Image 1 (cartoon, one colour):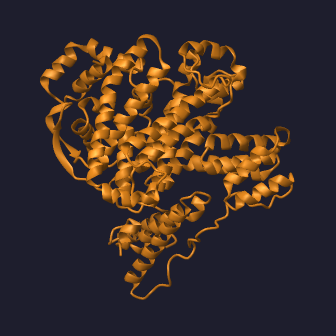
Image 2: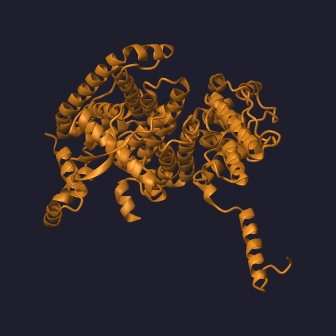
Image 3: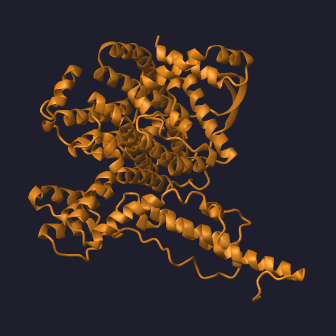
Length: 403
Length: 213
């Protein structure tokens, strides 16, 4: 059984347990447990690389109207419930705010408003909460979460070594099972609607049609990403995968190919672009979704790169900003400060481009997701970028506390 | 036919002024120039058309007498939008770069990029950097685009075109986020009306707020 998962779940129950007196008692009696949970989760990034990448795409809740925020929460909870019901309760632990944007974007593009229902959930069994009823969009997002979790665990098994790698091997068992289940479920629903889908997608042969194909596409882009990172570390051995070589890679940086931050961000943009646009029937909304996905993905990658830069500088892992800093003979912190305007502008432009694309959607003006999406793209993401550039390496939630 | 009020995102009892304001906001937002060079340009054109139609329809419904079409300034031209900021007025430079400029103005960015990459390292002057920045900007690689614009400005500090390109991207990023829910604000016109109203009220009670009226 995966320890960080359990710890995270304990923490989730304790924090979200509402006003239950027993939970309150546990909270006061066992602060060390909570501290340990928090530390484990935050410092030693057990979670998965790509899953933990997410988290920069969140709304600024205090700028939303109450009903808008309630709707946003309903989507979040509905997504969590969909993950529990359709795939596995374990999967709901990987739920991030970013998936909510994915769900909302797809709902907007399909012009699907969704029904809000009252349900209980495991993390908060005492109160019923408003949640979006399970729909095709939500179960697709759940499947995507399973796919990304699986892909990232595989990625970590390849990159890590020693005990950590063993841990990921353990994590692979549940994630692989969840991924398989997601594919099985999607196949079942696809056979139900096979005729309709086949006819609609005839014009788009180049796009993945089944979830499995989408999984392959995602894996392909992620492989391209790690290939790029490896070639940036050492261009002479493109097929390098053994971690013990990382030291020797560092010792000959002159052979490295310079990969600009934008180039490194592109594969991740492609991943999200494929996920956002998967299975949309309408040609124009597919195009919009591709744009939104690309820009959001690139934003996430660049943010994460800036955030991890000090850590990567120490460990010698690939990071586009570390490489750029080395090229200028600077420490990465100084580099991030010196070129802050450029980086921040680039990040803002990504948000602006995503907003430009999504606002072209037919139902944009009337859809309940509009205020939330606008809030995320206009306020939330630039704020995350600002936090990251202010204090790279400090987790986002702690930065909030510091503010 | 969809509800024109919904298209503009205003309520049925909105004043003419509010509708006009919202229309202008939307028209500015969806203006095809904002999407020049992107494959979303046709969608923006459609949206623009929709907005224009909705506005026209509301105008017709309201005035009873048809008040001569929409707010004329923003008409959607479909296709062939010239790329913003890269007007080919500043000719000169290497002969190959003139061709690149033409391609960029025609919206054929991929070809322009290939030609640019084929130019040898030694011959990459300020204009090359600027054009490379334009190509990258269109592709959405904003970080690199700025890098090349900065280089162009550095190599040719006197050139206003390069500086304008860099300023353009910086400004639009700087302005980004300031527009969030701005329409809820109070325009200068509202303030004046408010003042005049207050003045009238004061005069009713024998006082005077604004001496001159």
